[in-house]
Image 1 (cartoon, rainbow, N blue to C red):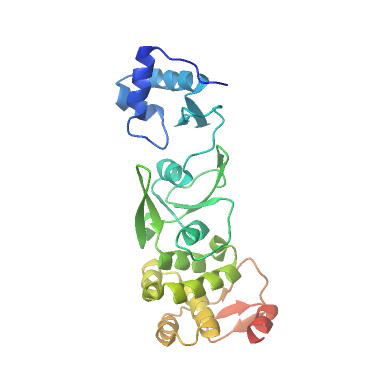
Image 2 (image 1 turned 135 degrees about the vertical axis):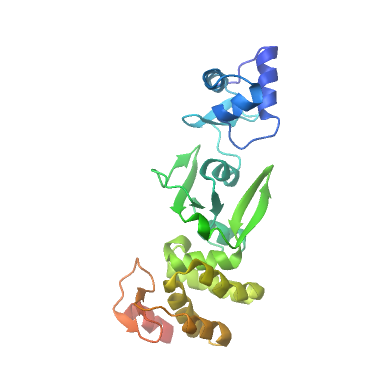
Length: 269
């Protein structure tokens, strides 16, 4: 459907609404920008959507349709900015942050969002963009960097914090093997970040992080003596699986971590 022409008044109102290039548009924002009631704002957004000037993301949420677009069936211009607008307080983490910082060359099909919200749908698909939402306490919003995506300021976990999140939950990195590879890339290519690993781990207070990190460091990077000793000094009681998603039948008592026999064989080879 081609965009339908608007009256001078309607065009002026839409221009006012889009002036600051918002990543998403809601009735609440229209109320403020246009000085109308919530009911009027909702009707106008729906009208502009039917006319092809806005694209509906979900109920009450729209994105602008570029004027050069031949169809209103558009993909999100920047999922990072949309995630910040829709799931705030949040930050981009896990595999998406790892891609951003060059820790992995693997391509993931969804955007990993760490949010303080508890969404009903944790894997929404919005205008062809896939999101995966993980809830974290607001007190854990540490080790973050700000980046600008267009006119939107987006929070993303720094390289070390990204690794700590993935060590706490290896699924955030596509599994412990990928996490181990990214840890290697961090130590080699961004060595200054290594000093932050235990700092972030201490702030988050997740005991399994020290067990997995210490084991991987001793196995793959025995030269990281100071980091290994810091992990050993912070070992908590109890045991953790190296990867909760994988079977584990061998206990590494030094690190209180369960691993699979096949993982041990590969480590020795």
